[in-house]
Image (tube, rainbow, N blue to C red):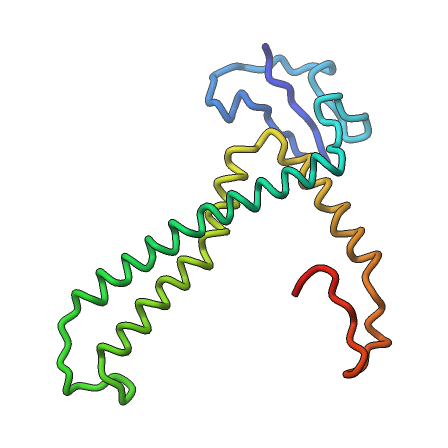
Length: 169
């Protein structure tokens, strides 16, 4: 099977042959090139809304699942680092004993791990789901355009009549 080359806005994107590092020399011809003005092949069909929302839910689960271990890993690393520092109780850091500063810094490491967990989960999910990524990104654009289009006009907002927040926040 020959890798298919797709031409989109002047850029040539190689198919999965280069991703797998298979040394295949493609036969470049008109039948192997799809211009951006042509229609997409059936395997690039858009996702239905229920499929899209199910995929978003699974993606969010990946992010949550990586948040827990990344939090504990960062907390453990911070505890091992700041716990191994020998300090003199008579020397103060910002006017506070070092043990309290090290405790706050250890908790800060755990908080940093908590914040980095979804980023790691999103990256892992994107690496493992590359085949459906273009369809999901296309549906993401439609989803966010729908939210912007149906958002309440904030010009009528007052302190006693705030804009309703239907999207959490």
